[in-house]
Image 1: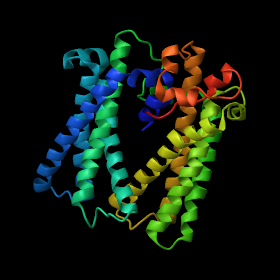
Image 2: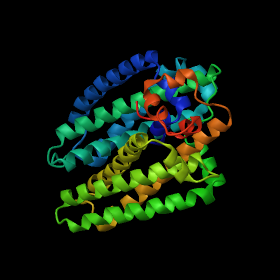
Image 3: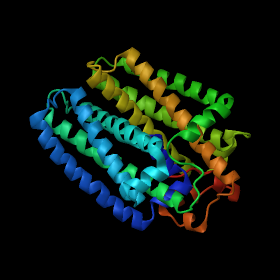
Length: 351
C-alpha cells in the first residue's frame, strides 16, 4: 500500500490526482467496477466454492487484476498499443501483479479481518463478507490504478515527477540510506513486537486482537511520524522537525498515514493468519511477528516518504501556489510553527 501513501503524502503527486476534473472521473471509475464486481460475485457464487478462503482470495485477486489494467487505461487516456510502447511490459506487469492481485488480496483480507473483529465471521456467515471482500477491494484498486494512470499520463505529457509510486525509488534508497534507515526499522520492529505482546493478557481471541491492534496502531503510528522527519532531514535532527511543526498538524499525520496504515497492515496480517493459515486467532507468536513486521514496515515506508520530500525540495520542486490552494494538502502543510522552512517540513494529508 506504499503507492497509496505516496499518492497522498507527496505534494507533487497529490496535486495531480486531486484536481476536480480528475476526481469526477474517478467517482465513475470506482462505481462501475463495483457493479461489475457484484455481478462477478453472484456468478462465481454458483460456480466456485467461495466459502473456501483461498478460493475467495483468488477470485478477488483476479477481479482486481482486470480492474487495475482497465482503470489504468482510463487514467492514461490512451490505447493499449501506445501504453505498451510507452510504459513497457515491466510496468504493466507491476500494475497487474502488485496494484491488482496483491493489493486486491490485501484489501480482501482487511475486510474479512475487520468483520471478524466485530463478530461477523466469514467462516460462519460467508455470503456477506465474501461479497464485501470482492466489491470493496475492486473499487479501491480501480481508484488507485486510475490515479497512477493519470500520473503517468501527465508525465508523458511533460509534467515532471521525481517520484513514481512503483517503489523503484524505495529500493534505491534502501541501498543508499541503509545506515540511516536501519535504526528506524529496528525501533519499529521492537516496539511493534512489544505492543502486540500486550494481547497475551486477554484470554479471548477477539479481545486479544483488539488489544494488539490498538497497541500496534499507536506505536506504529508514532514510529511512522518520527521516521518521516528522519527521512525529511537525513543530515539533521528529526526532533527539530517535530518541534517546528504545530501539534495539530503532527496529530493529523500521526493519524494518516501513521495510525490508519499501521492498523490496516495489522488487520491484513490478522486476516492472513485467521483465514489462510486457519488459526482461531492471533496467538502470541503470530501477534509478535505481525506487530513487529507492521511497525518496521511503517518506519521504512514513512522514512521513504520523508526522504522523497527531501529529494523533491532539493531539486527545486517546492510548493507552488496552486498546491497551497489544494484543500487536501493545505491543512497539513499550511499551519506550522516558525518561518517558511517549517512549512516545508510538514507532511501531506489524506484526500
